Image 1 (cartoon, rainbow, N blue to C red):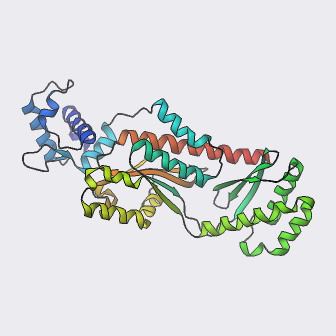
Image 2: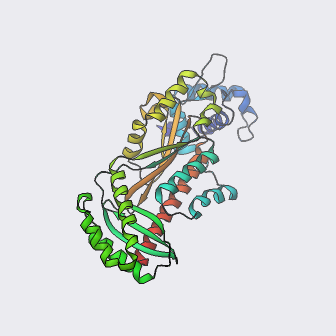
Length: 353
């Protein structure tokens, strides 16, 4: 259907969307007349805008007002018209800060990523870790970090990687860490929670000798991890107050609906998990999501995929006139970087063991 638009109509539609994203007001033909790239009269632009309205790309909210994009207009803009946003050096530095912090815990990385995305885009950020059910640890790897600190890498049976830094009260020889890794893979890996009995823990402690105190905290963490993943996924929001900055949510009813959607977020969780676009950014505009609370909003997100498994997602929710180019570039860069970071952690754990 997009092929039905002439190059002139495409240029005018892009200019209308760009202008509306910037100022939030309906765009009239006079506002576009001075566009150096057009060289068209106000009457010609007005006629083209009228035709774009008839085709469903624009709508005139009031008789005397200019026009604003429809969901279809935004969709065409996102799919074919917008220019790719180039992240600034400061933005890249801020995004990279999430990855260089001294943490290897995926949940922590995703949580921090949500905060940064909200700050950089000025929209409400979504940070999701996936729902699991009946997970167990398939393999353990241990990597020394400092004399009194090591990194525990746990590969779950769904191939998701979980990591945890373990601090010790004394220096732990590398040979001891190798023994601990071996015991975890023999006595804990692949076992159901019910099989991790006191006798199993005592046997592991016996084989660890004077370093027996390392066993119980790790087993306790594994139990919490497996129990936690069985209870459901986690959907966090940052910058919810940023909604108040946009006139689209100045109406009490619209704001109440949106806040209700964020509070009872099962629908959002389902939308993210069931989206079939795992390789790139997913964009839901207005009524495309079928959620009434999002009828004047957009939701943009990208799944974080490691070794073919979805381990989380990063995205934003905001008005339909959001700055799609900047949002998409920001989310794509950060999610791709997180995927690389998690692969580094997992590979480091395997190589270190």
